[in-house]
Length: 376
Image 1 (tube, rainbow, N blue to C red):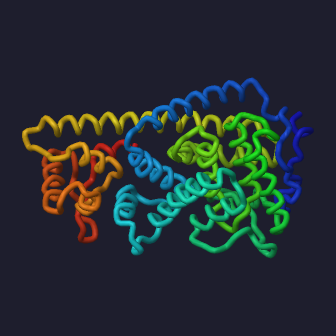
Image 2 (tube, helix red, strand yellow):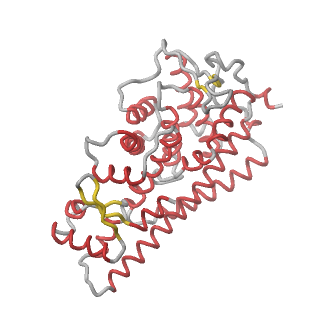
């Protein structure tokens, strides 16, 4: 019945140059099931927004939680890194970082590059999309060139692995036309009136279907999701673990995408995205609460301990901005001199709050509770 409202992709082996422009017919998403799940997702996201907005130290969210989102989004693309590798790389931030940790840090930089860009521009545009892609891939490339043949193939090792399941539009002019339409759909809430979460779900499919770049489209699309939420005021900073749900339900994610192009099944796609928002809002909310509870507990413990620490509040705030700390972090923040910083960090190891690690000839101090919470 839905097919009369949406023109599906007739041949997965041929570029879908007739990918319908937005908006889609409202009959495709105005169902009781979608409206009920929309209410659940909005409530969960609003609760997260309210909780995160009143946290004094936004660095706690910006560094720790956004870094986990970056790690998980890359894992969806089979780019894996351990938490130790990732946090060490983030602690160092030097040119020697390579491999999977570097890919993750690029994604995180794309999160903040785009976030700051939109704070200035207020609106999405083609330049924004290209910058996100270029940051993720560390390239100067732009839209896919006309000569490039691109298709999506099934993964795995079964009998159907390696088969073409989708071929995106081909030709720079066609791609730009469809991106212009997508950008207008995202920006113009007067012309295209619908709930922001519904619009995010529809826009995410459209971006993935356009597949505008040579590589990195999945990661760029997930960055776009989070920036859409901050741009529309549903979050203050890009902290939602949206990739966690996608990774945990990876097969459903890709089958739902294909369901739209092959069967016009917008309902299941939108429901998937709404469940992702609801689930990850709850997870992120709970993580924030647990981090703050542990931070306050340790801070109060230090104040009461007979081994006095000067500036315990500043010390603990710094220790909770990222799981790995170095002496240099405390001295650069102007909290302590080098000897005092080292003495205090070693004391915290004796108290089993931190664990000292030697990696590559350098000493790092692992915040055990923060590491545990973020790794769960």
